[in-house]
Image (tube, rainbow, N blue to C red; front, side):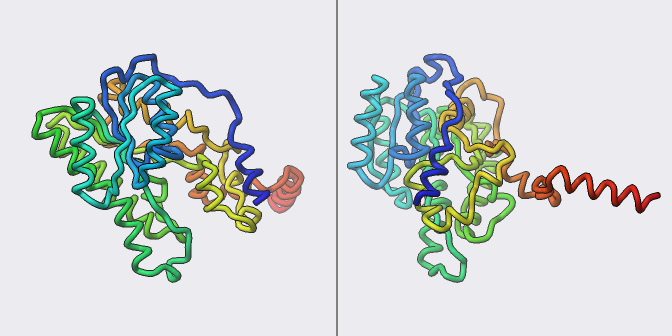
Amino acid sequence: MVRTLHILERINVCDMNGMLKEGSFKDKTIIVTGGGTGLGRSMGEYLLELGANLVITSRKMEVLEQSAEEMMKESGGEVLPVPCDIRNYNEIENVIREAENKFGRIDGVLNNAAGNFISPTERLSHRAFDIVIDIVLRGTSNFTLATGKNWIEKKQPGVFLNIVTTYAWTGSGYVVPSACAKAGVLAMTRSLAVEWSKYNIRSNAIAPGPFPTEGAWKRLFPGEVAEKIDPLKRIPLKRFGEHQELANLAAYLMSDYAAYINGEVVTIDGGEWLQGAGEFNGLEAIPAEMWDIMEKMRSKKQG
């Protein structure tokens, strides 16, 4: 626990401000799934700050209501909390209906809700595997299909932004259900970017690296796990991401400023996945003195 808290203490390294101009989302309505907590809330708060009408969804209404109240008090904007299990298509249609009743129309969907198990795959039950696939892939595809059909029927433009991961294309052990599901979301993002562009519907994705939130990181790195695995060591920039950095990118990709970006996945991870991908990147651990010795040995051999 001490180690986990130490990791969390290193999150904020600078004062990060919003990058878009005030009113960039004026009169626009954005739905954020998983919008009551964590990164979903951080991205939603910035969209709200930029003038958006915000709809936040998750399964726990009490969490949504508390978050909505706090966000409106802070920003003065409008937040509509609607409970929804994104695995249930009917509940998604209800979110769309309530959002339109409240704000008139929907302009964008930020598919952020997810679920994961960190575990050796052979320890997972088929039910655990199903849960992750259902939330991440089926939930995202449900929300995308329901909203996309709504926009197409009304001849209305729209934008999807899907949160994926870098292991959507590299794969990763110990998170196999999530890797499978996120890969599917990424494929859907790129496919619909082509198919639905004729309806003026854009689809993009973000692959975030480590952006710690207290609750999630305590679950991912409890006790001795945090002692053995320091995620900071895998990041070339030697720091974690700040929530505002992710919020800036999300807002940009959903805004009219990014109207020509379609079918793209933007990685924001401080170089983490490239660090792991490079065969010799681990040589960073070699001290200067050892490089000197190796150079002398090489010179002697060549001589």
